[in-house]
Image (cartoon, rainbow, N blue to C red):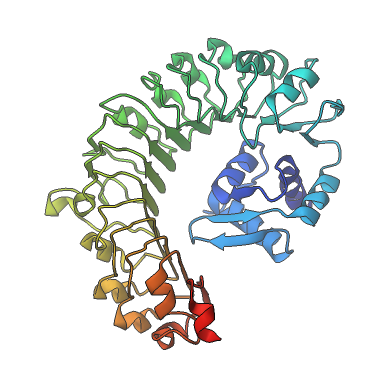
Length: 444
């Protein structure tokens, strides 16, 4: 294994065995630690990160690998995790008990419980670059935990304290001048962030999503000149989108649980944004997207926004409705989704993956689905009223992956070799259809 890949692989030892990992998070971690070497060509961080993942996949180091075209999901199973521990040697340590010693050579630390952190971290060290809690920094005294990080690890690059419960983030966070990755998401207690956080000009990733009591985002966000990934929740009724849009490097944006907002993105340009996730925004009615304002948008995922008008997702005016070049679209937990929105046809020349999950009122796809000539992956999960695929699904000549689960009627009709409509999809290279109850008895 080449040295650049060995360093990346070693970091898998920080996660528990069988932990679900996504390409976004691991690529962000690699880059924050300086492990992604960007060549002088036009290749991006994403390109290089995906190359590394495919090299690891080709060596059978990644299991349960799912390809969503613009991102991937996978796990690290037991034997491979043991190999990662061996490769990491003394540089990476996953702390699971009080009896472990933290050597002076350790650069990357993860903890299964925050109490272990308080008990074992006793001395200041400039060597530590990473502190993370893969399953959440829950319980115990989170303020003490945070203060230890700020006082003892002056050269931290990565600090992941998601799931913690501290009430304030100290202004002294600015002492971590080298910090590139900060995750304090899923904190149920924090109400404000200090404006001084915007002085962290090396910060590449900032995650404050799922902080349900956060009253406002900090002022001065535009100063975060290195930020390419921003995930947030806030109680604000008007989001500071113009300030966020001034983040010229921003490629990944999550808007989550902003439950006082009715409309977002009207007239605001995001020239570099590639991925947009809009989750759990219950009052959101309008999501205004178009090609002029989102010229590089490739991935769009909308999850549990029950009042969102999906047909108006691209705006009211025809002149605003130029074609988005989306590669991945995900609709999740949307009871209002009865048919696919018509504007989705505009992505016919770019769309590679369509993911529909937990949409309990959708019954079928329209015939124009066949115009999505580049569609490679189609997933339908937990849509109990879904009864049939279009007759012309044969025209989707690029379709390689079809996954259907939690759709009883659909699974029965398209069951491999025995379903009534199996011949319509049998040409597809990779098919997973879960077996509905009663089908096994029918076969016997």
